[in-house]
Amino acid sequence: MDKLNILWTNADPITSEKMVMMYSINSKLQNWWSDVTIIVWGATTKLLAENEMIQEKAKMALHSGVKLIACKSCADQLRVTEKLESLGIEIRYMGEDLTEILKKDGKLLSI
Image (cartoon, rainbow, N blue to C red; front, side):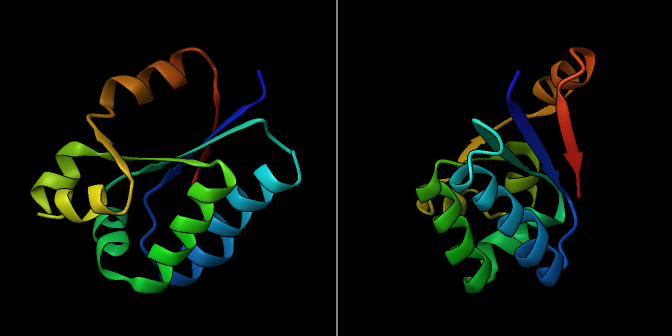
């Protein structure tokens, strides 16, 4: 299957901009992958809610067809659920989804 999942847990802004966002956007624009999903988990939920530059990159990713899904438990605990929703980020519990990706040998890039 031509689907890539990026598990984004590294809240370093440079890594976020220069790897996660850059690769995911280019993957869609260059047709390297037909389906790209960024799973926003842990500290990255807070980074995305607070960093305007990363928010702009996330908007570009969404516009290019990348899906962004944030872990609901993380977003709720860090009190950023409403902010992420306002950015157009899907919020849902991701434990079962991640387990399914792993069990089905899905393509998972962890950053």
